[in-house]
Image (cartoon, rainbow, N blue to C red; front, side, top):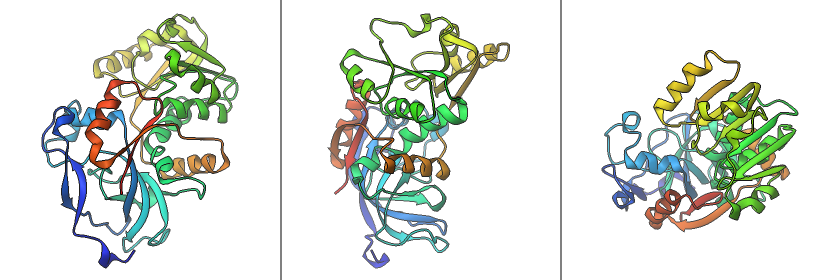
Length: 323
């Protein structure tokens, strides 16, 4: 797409104050301009992740600040519309995906990606499937591999195994050589989690995994509903507990306790790492990894998508279609 055809204004979802899903607006904002090392993408699909409504609610305003308007969304899938002066990896029209660059998000007609952090969408994958991948899959991979240091033969538990991150984590744990993968989920999603490769299913309504004494080498709390202190009895010697940004007090308390134990804690937010997305893309192309999509909403109905995500009922990812 020639740069001259890119409109000065784009349709976007944004908010000008923190609050409930009611603060989300659908309107026009200036189309972003790529820096020399960035690409501008005509977004065809994006998604809603829990981090989006946590930011929107103001729960993370110490990090996100008070500059408005803010465009939510991290996941981008679409076609290259323009490239920065130093970009050599792609050209206009290429199908690409990744996590949005900079402070503005992806729930819009156009978004920016860093050249170092995007990947090409496999030919057999749709824009909606690609949009379901970046943040959730990067979080899962980094939790298991970089922070959890998963070893071949490890016993691994995924808490929240049917969610947008957990559904990737189950598949990746098997791909990385886990000996046994236990998925914790509700009874309605047990069949799904089993189909993703879980060896054991625990119904979280009936079974408290923290009572499985010394069973697991790695516990990944993909929904940040537990804590290191609660999960520690379930860890084997030299076991690891990994979580995605739980309540700060619990993280600090856990860090202090882990300093005096052979059982370790790691709390993190996903990094926008191109080498990780390349591995994820290879798995996707080989059929080792498949995204699970619960529902697809049009961009204009992002507020409804936020409410659905906040309900905790989604199995897999919530995708936004951007026409």
